[in-house]
Image (tube, rainbow, N blue to C red; front, side, top):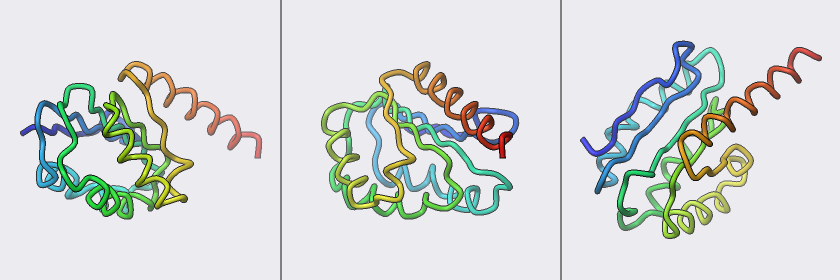
Length: 134
């Protein structure tokens, strides 16, 4: 399968999608089939990483497809990190984020997976620090 996905930590606060080679929207829908339920039923907000660094292109109809997926992700999403996007994917994702302003503040882009993990650690630490002060 050109998209692998699974938990990125034992606490189940991070879910990772790894895109490899050529993939289709059907591949993504199959991989993300349960993510809506995971987000809705998790006892805490979930972070998502979509790692496109090893993929080759965005399939056609990207704006419509990503817009549908974005609507499913609004519940219980903490942060979404998009990794390794090519210029066409950046354009599509920016268009979708402009269509979903509530999601825009929770999406960050990174060039590498290591950068994404570092960013997520910093955000999580800052959120924990703010919560412990209240």
